[in-house]
Structure formats: structure tokens, C-alpha cells
Amino acid sequence: DIQMTQSPSTLSASVGDRVTLTCRASQTISNWLAWYQQKPGKAPKLLIYKASNLESGVPARFSGSGSGTDFTLTISSLQPDDFATYYCQHYYSYPWTFGQGTTVEVK
Amino acid sequence: QVQLQESGPGLVKPSQTLSLTCTVSGGSIISGSYYWSWVRQHPGKGPEWIGHIYYSGITYQNPSLKSRLTITVDTSKNQFSLKLTSVTAADTAVYYCARLPVGAYPIDFWGQGTLVTVSS
Image (cartoon, rainbow over all chains, first blue to last red; front, side, top):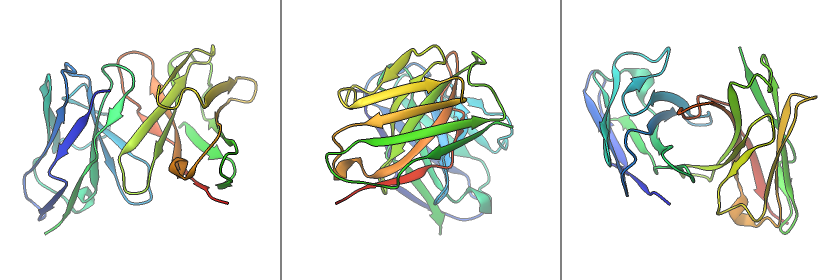
């Protein structure tokens, strides 16, 4: 199975900050990577697909980049609604796997 | 607007079978545009992909669960289901049903999830 490793596990930030989350795959996954946002007690919400494509309805302050094994999710100006946990997930081959998550918390 | 709703027992005894159903509303399960997925999430952990099924019955399943797992679809009821046999406490999780667009896309929409606890 392809392992997805996210860093950091927790990120403390303030409203207006630019934040960057990292996801690394244990082998190349081309650009078959998605990012999800999850809030407590809620289902994950798709933000980014194919590494850098913004899902419809997702604010433009979210962006994704990377290919191969290293990927990033950037929030250009953190908003109050963005404090949540973010997961990366590959869909390059079966079984699909998710990272362990990065929690963005209030500094 | 599509809605996905999981249903089934919230408590299952060890060694028994976990059975969940997802009812799709606001769209047809036989549209051909989607696979229908199951994902679970253990408390405090990242999600775990379980598998998905096409309306024709074609399935893709996580090998780690495959020997215990059955995913089926009932097009007449616009539902799909999951059965997991011989459950243990390690199967305690929130179980989500979800929608997966056909083609090279990830899951794009999730149900609200249902907590299943395995305990005697």
C-alpha cells in the first residue's frame, strides 16, 4: 500500500496568515491526489483534486501543488472558517489511502 | 441536490456481522456517472477507504478487508450496502457512504456518517 504522510500534525496560525500543509507519498502517485477539509463531527469536504484543481464552490484562497511524491495545500489568507483538519488522499492505485491529517488550530 | 443517508445498527457484538445501507436521494444510482463508496474513520484517525461499487455490481474493495467484506447495490431501492463479517473492536468507527464520479476523480460527496461500535 502507498503510505501518505502529512506534516505538521498540528499547525497553529492566526486569521490572515498564509499556511502551507505538506503531504508526501511513499511512492510516486503522479498527480492523483486530493485534499479534504473536515470539521469535528462532520464528513470530509473535497477541496482539491488532481493535486491542483479547485473543486467547484471552494474559495480561491485554497490552492494545491505538487506531483510525484510531494504535495502542498496552501491557504493564502486563513479565515475563521478554515480552522479544521485537512487530509490528503491518493487515488493512483488500489487501495486508496489517506494521510493522518493536519489540524489547523487558532494560535 | 443529492443526499446520502447511512442506516443500520449503532452497536454490533464481536464476531457478528456489521450491516449498513446507504440510501441515495436526489439522484439515480443507475445514472452511470458515479461509483458508490464506503469509507470509515476510526476515532482520531484519518479515513480508511473500504470500497466502491458501480450500479452494475462491479466492485473495488480494500484488500485488508476483502475476506470479510461484501458490498452490494439494490437499484430498485436506490440503495447500496455494506456487510462486514466477524467484527472486532478494531471495526469500531464512523462509517460514511459517499459518491465517486466515474473517471479519474476522488470522492466528491459524503453522507453524514454513522458511528458503529463493536462491543458486547
